[in-house]
Image 1 (cartoon, rainbow over the protein chains, first blue to last red):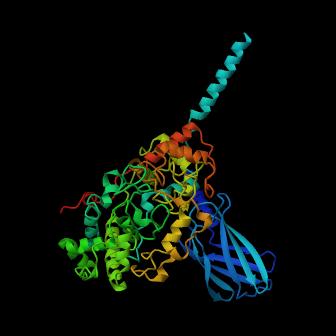
Image 2: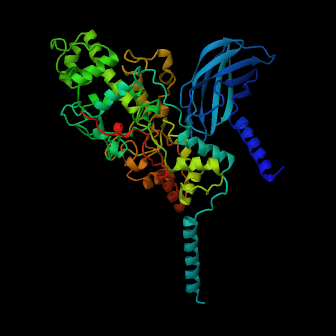
Length: 134
Length: 425
């Protein structure tokens, strides 16, 4: 194998790795206080800036059971630039099986974004945060 | 050696050291990194998607509407003094701007004229985004007393009384109602005009008001169809990106100078310009507070916080009765962000063809691109809201390289010449 060919494969591998880390369209986190496992899957694949899109948020409890009828509020922003989200996303639909449709998300700058979730389940308020590097 | 001479030697050494630090360029990399290359590619005009569909404007891509809009765009009869057309401020020879700090029509406005090439790609219009479509934007200057100074009744009458316009209109939008009954349709009337025009408007039947507003809205839709023809063309930067497909060496292409290449590296890196000036149009068409001072003697502009409030209450917005969109399609309006967070935020301008569009910023406060770069390097505290930008530690040579790169973004529009001239009458 020639040096050029090795470089070719290495570049290809680097591209795949960059795409899978920088634009991961599924993120997972846990709530504070503990009790909820949160998974968020973007409906925009790959995740890119300047496009309005939605996410499906899945909530499960510590036993892995789906959590329905939660009130979820999503805010966030870019800590580096001290500004919030470009849009005001909100949950527009409960999809059942612990899944919720979040619509109206658009990231308008490359860089580190934080999404803050406030999740009300019956009398308990949970908080969670996910980070996305675009 | 006398002590004074030694001291002088040290001072001269330090001075030369400082000057060298400020002015000696860093060597360019042999290859762009994978990340840099992805960013560079993302800015190329070849990445520009097809024009977005305007669901609110059923004639947006109808050639007959573009033809009609072309005629309207250059017609000075669309003004109270017969001297002002859209092209008075949006001059095709100056990148569809006017070279003034703020636009001057019948009177003097408070805002810098925005260029039009690629405007159809934006989700929001005006500096503060108080309009959510190109067609709706086109209506506001017509009724602004400082711009065209018309009332919508006069606009409707001009369409009805000009044979060509009547024909064009009826082909696109159906039969024009007759406006001859002056008891129903007074000579001047508008909900936004002077007191007399407003009073005349209030006295009209709601159904007659609707007929007139519908003609007015359709005029905006024709003007938008024309403006969708105005698109940026490839610049030296785009030729450079095309050359990169053939050779990945940073300096193999002759499309950009070494200074411009260094400027590009800064643009996508240390200078952070790409944060907001991203995508093939070098704008995210979103809203940012970058602490641009208001024009002397003028209060700071509320910007997007006020703009979104106006867009939401605009009868010509995406959800309004004059829009061809289904309300479910108006997602930008539905999920838009306003409020106090957006105080002082103005829309990011495109960086393509800046050579034609000086002076810069929402009230033309900054005369030159050198001063614009100085503004972002300093990143002072905002007078209202907060400055999202952070100070940049750019050396003198780097500022010059960044400035040189901006010249690589000038290119002839990708628009047929006939659209850039007044139409034959």
